[in-house]
Length: 402
Length: 82
Image 1: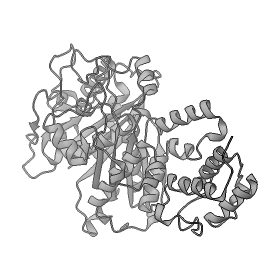
Image 2: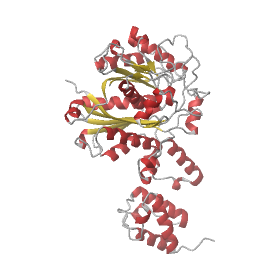
Image 3: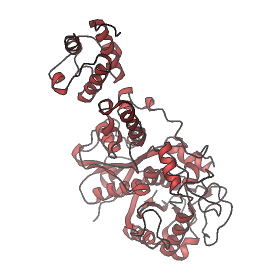
Image 4: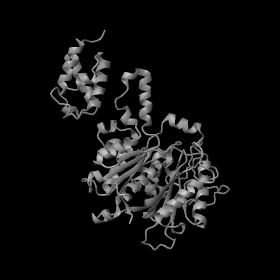
């Protein structure tokens, strides 16, 4: 029998604050972490989590990962040391870009002061696996450890990869997540040049007036464990990864395939993996970027994969409250999904006011809504999917229960 | 004209450099070892860059790899710059 995968700890740093509770409580409270067209994690101070030396040896994206991992690991009850042989614990952390501000800073040093002035910390600061490396060192992890790079799907792929490591028997526990800190002038200009970001600086997924995504920054980290072993050691699960699937559009550098066929297949496969059907779903945490193309093709993919249930299930987008955290998004949104299920509440898609032709699902406009009317009793766990789609046509879908 | 390279000046620049890379200020002394200061090879490259900027003395990896404490680096820089 396949090993079940429990989530025993969650941690987040987002534009809504530091902590996985701040993320969900403030979102449900309809607060938005976006200001002046970007979602800064402005409540975060690295010195609260690490020494000055650790901070200067970590790019901001890795600092976010460290802080989120401390919260997750503490909740899992790992603070006094790993409850597993360290060789049986893995660490998989996604990012879209890596240490971009460190790269830009050293590019300036090179131009202004020459090659010999470039910092020896440049590579460890900018490398895409810096988050995974930092967490492995911090928590003494000796098993499978690597970064995942799949643009805006990286966080979800990381959760999926960690899940597979446990299911396949390669690890008993895996610290997974995603981290991003790319609020630089270059990134803003580059995303704007390709027409991906909102010229008005407003994130309103699925609304007729949506005009692009708003960039955000932060990290989400989850502790995954073999559910049976976690139970034996008395750990309290905050949720479960029931299923995971990933597909590829093979269609265009950046645009999603309009019919959403491969995204739909990822949703179907994730449900198959979870051994459930569309009728069992209580909530969908959408990728919902607020771009004209994504929100349309994602709606199509949900209709294809869920059939009649697509119109029943509440669908909302975390990006309406925090913007698009790129490679962190999938992990942060998996956490938001688990938290929404634990609160038995579908948080709203903030800013949704005007229906667009063909975008006719229940996007939870206005207020948060109680979940659990789907035949589930008050105490039964709820089930959701969290969608993540990345530039390059990478689709990753997690099926979560809490 | 540049100030003369005195032991005191080199000591100040290196102490400041060590603090900059994250060593604890109150642990920094001539006798402190890089091990106790938790100064690693990457930190030593940064210190070497600072020394070159200040004194024009190039320290290569081979020059510092066998040095164990702060005083030995100070003495090497002073010797090279005279």
